[in-house]
Image 1 (cartoon, rainbow, N blue to C red):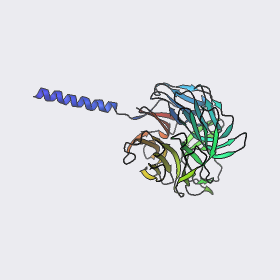
Image 2: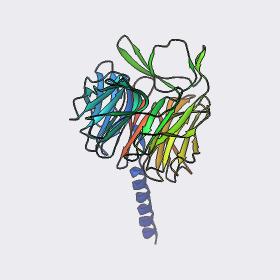
Image 3: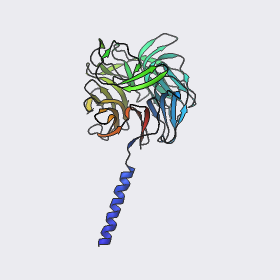
Image 4: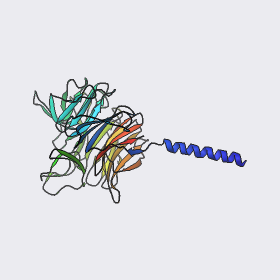
Length: 379
């Protein structure tokens, strides 16, 4: 009997150990560059990241083995903020502070010549479409928009669409759940009229700095800087189009209580978005196409949320981070399997999460710390 019991006990221990070993966790890869803000997973093993490094120069980090090894594609761009590839990993677009860059061979990036602007978010959707969010101008017509630039033919031609809101609702992130239904999250935050060296404010918490040809990224206090405020409150909104950008409807307004970072949708009806203000950060969700929005997550006081990805109608991730006593800058990765009813938090030291991308159960995040930028991997 004792022998049978011992055998049974060892079997249970083996099963528990196997389950523990197979559990996915977030870990920081060996990638170390000056700035890295956006990631695009092509498969569970292949990922591209928009980056810049004061030694290598600006460009793209690429890996085809889940960041065990990487190669540098570049120089390309300048202050590179996000990247997205259509299925297959050949055609991609990189968002920068000076416009969009396109590759149609996965290695050579060229500036999209017909439009100029500033964008920190680009998404691939469908089989051949790319959508960037920000402020754009068509060079030929001189038309300017606060909204999206969209290509439906692998980046060959682009159209720009204005979301039709006041200037305080700066278009920040876009979600493209179908060919004609798109969402844009927008907003701004209290900012000083004092001149800063920051070349681009990624959010109220992250400054992209440029000085003497060198770039840095820094996590800053959530408090507004001293000086006269150019923007008061935290205006934020979510806009929606169902006709491919021709007309837009504002489906949510924060009434000055929070501005929005990333938004993502599982389909035309189910979307999630993250937002923040001086007090903290929040996750919102809709299941009825934006008619109603509910707060499904509240981060710790002073925390920040920038990343948002829906995996299915019930599974989603929200990410960001904050400064913690004795730990420094800590990354927050929130995971739900029940459409936001409950969340499990994973913390990763020195890995403030600025973007998320998943493929076949493996996740990637642009990760910032106080010394460099990297890629966090979930597997």
